[in-house]
Each structure stands twice: as structure tokens, then as C-alpha cells.
Length: 192
Image (cartoon, rainbow, N blue to C red; front, side, top):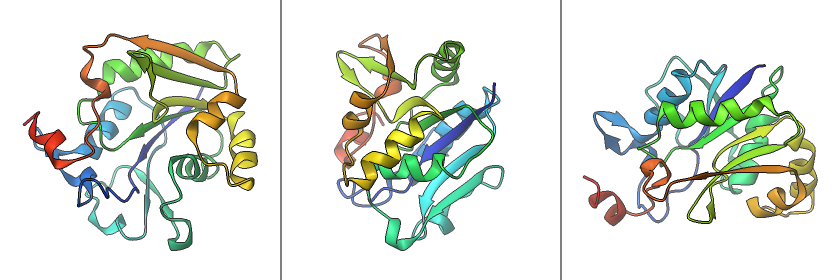
């Protein structure tokens, strides 16, 4: 079974004040931690989904890029996921990771991909303390049609997608740092 890895790195970072995917942790950009976790699990292809304004800043030549056109930029994560997934063929599952989770690990990716053996589900989504994390999740190719239908109706919330497809939720411990995402500079200062 072939699984693609996709790093979402095209958002505005409006709360952060600058593109947060280029903030550094342990000598690597945030987005590189997501790329490494996918690579260590031999996912292929590995793709960074970004936009025309950011593409020139990436220092990564061993991945593919899907670049949103200016007219597509900043339409939210559901559009970004659909846009990326629809451009990658010949895979059954897509592992989507956001670019603002510097504590992502290959062990987390490994645990999640082992659950893809049950082909009944359209998505495998982690939860922590009752909160879902759809931007650190696996989506089956079957989910593309529902994404397309929602976007055609201008329905862009991730929860609307999850309500319409068959989802396996996977609970993780409250203390697991994998799910810490950085939205504001003060969030990051807490961990430096």
C-alpha cells in the first residue's frame, strides 16, 4: 500500500506575524521536522503544499512541491488538503501534517500508518484530551470526492468533512507534545 506524505505550509501565519514554517527548532525549520518524520517512515512521494508567495523560501530539494496559484491561496486547510491530494495519483492514503508542529516525531507517524491496514475508514484522525487534530491525520483516496463536494458548496470547515466520512479516531495521552502547534510568537517563547 502506497502512502504519500504532505506537509501543509501555505497559510498566512497572520497570528504569528511572519511565516512560522521558517521558525527554527533544534537547527531545523519547523516544516523540516514534519518532512523528516515522513521520510523516516519511507512515505512517498513527500510533498510540501505551499503558495506562490512562499515557494522561494524553502530549502528543500529532496521533496516535491504543490504550489497554489494566487487565486487559490489562503482558502483554508480543507481546500489546501484537497488541492494537494487531487494532484497526487497512484497512492491509497495521504498523511497530512501541518508545518507548525515542531515536536512531530517519526514514532507518531509510524503509529498512525499502522492503522491504515483497516481499509474501512476514510480518515484516521488523532485526538488528545477530546480535541481532534485533522491537520495531523491520514486521508484515504475515497475522501477526495466528499472534499470536492463540500468545496463546491463553499463549505470549508474540516469538521464538516469529518462529519460526512467514516473516521477512526485515535486517542493520544494529554502530555504528548506532538500536538503542540505554534500560532503566536508567545506560544513559541514558552518552548525555547
